[in-house]
Length: 347
Ligand code: NAD
Ligand code: GLY
Image: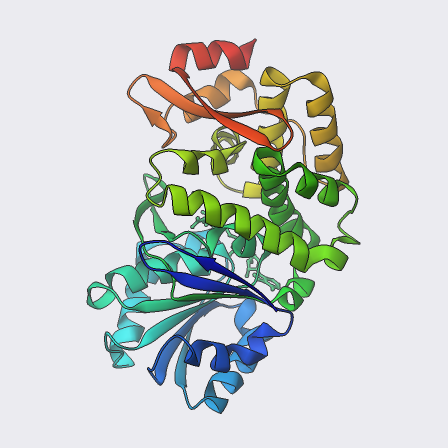
C-alpha cells in the first residue's frame, strides 16, 4: 500500500492499493466515526463494484444506501444533482454522516458538489474507478456540475476526507477510457517529471498495468505538491492545464460528443508543443501520445478553435494564460494578449 498525505485547508490521505475497494470499510473507519453513508455511482460502475464496497462497509458496521444515475457527462447536471439531494434527504443523512463517490470523474465531481452544498457541507470520500479520476479529478478538491452555458460552470472547492485508488478497478475500463487517463498522466510527465515521462514512454496500453501503482502514485504526488502550493487555483495550479486550453476548444468544437477529454488534452499538448518547444521535445511527446492511441493533431481549423480559447477560464479580460514545456519535465505558465496568443497559434 502507498499513501500520500495532502496538506490542504482540509488535510487528507490518498491510499493507493490494489484490492483497496474491499478494504474500504476499514480504511474509512479510520477517518470517520459515522456509521452511515450514501454511495453515489453510475449505471456501469455500480453493477461492477458497488456490492464489494457495500460488503466491506457492512463488515465495519457502516450502513449504506446506493444512488445510481446513468453514466456519462450529460448526467453531471442540475437535474441529477436534484435527485441526489432528494436521495440524501430521504436517507436521513446528517452533517456527521458522509457520502462516497464510486466512479469516474463525473461521479466524483457531482458527488463532491453535493457534499459541498447539502446541509452546507458534509464529508465525502472518493473511490475513483477511472485512471483520469485517480490521477486527477479525485485529488485537489475541484467539484462541479455542467449547466447549459458550459462545462463545470457551477462548483465549489471541497477537499475529500479520503481517496482510495484501487488499480484493480481499472482492469474493466474500455481502452479509450484508459487512454484518456494516460493523456493526463503524460501531462504530469511533461510539466514536472521527465522520469515519469520516460516510464510512460517505455510502456503502452497493454503493459502499463505492470507499473500502474507506481505511475498513479507519481502523478498524484505531483498533483499534491501543486495543489498544496495553490489550492484555490490562482497561480501554479494552472500548470495542470497543459494542453487543456486547445483541448477544451476541440471538445467544444465537437459539441462534446464522440471526442473525449483525453483526446483533446493529447492533441492540445502536441499542438502547443509544436508552436512553442524545440522539435525534439515535440517529436518525443507525439511518439508517446501515439503509443497510447491518442491523437497528435486535430481536424478542427485553428481559426474555429480560437474563439473557444477566448472563453477559457484561464482567460482574464484581454489576456490569456497558457502552458509551455520547452523541456520535458519543465512546464511554465505564460501570459499573453489574446491577440498575440492567436497569432502564435495560427503561425
Ligand atoms: P466518466 O466518469 O464519465 O467515466 C468514463 C466512463 O467510464 C463512464 O461511462 C463510466 O461509467 C465508465 N467507468 C468508470 N469506471 C469504470 C470501470 N472501472 N470499469 C468500466 N467502466 C468504468 O469520465 P472520467 O473520464 O472519469 O471523468 C471525466 C470528468 O471528470 C469530466 O466531467 C471532467 O470535467 C471531470 N474532471 C474533473 C477534474 C477535477 O479536478 N475535478 C479534473 C479532470 C476532469
Ligand atoms: N484538473 C486541474 C486541477 O485540478 O486544477
